[in-house]
Image 1 (cartoon, one colour):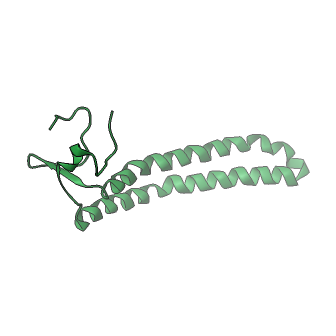
Image 2: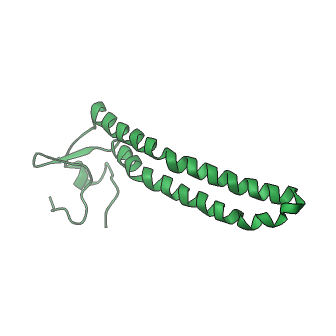
Image 3: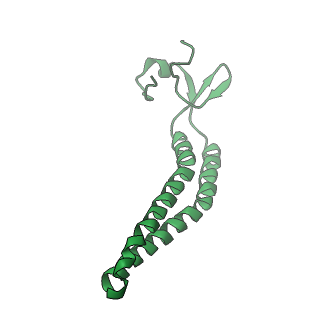
Length: 124
């Protein structure tokens, strides 16, 4: 079971560590913004599908001849949800990576370690 990073944890206190440099953090930020540029497509798809669903429901409620049109609005609402999931899936990994730049980098045996020790790590 992985324990959260804690300054008082003796196992992490004894490890050599350092802060991320601004240049390293900028590289990760650049990756996040690049991924966000790719995520514009699902963002626009989500907005478009949501507006279509809302427009169909609105028209079905205000135009008597189109009252049965509301039966297909759920298809576009489902499309909006699918695009929202796609948007989140595209951005989760780079956002988590950027958040990790605010935690220390552990250095073990001359190698940089980017996470706290877990159950598969060798004991001190």
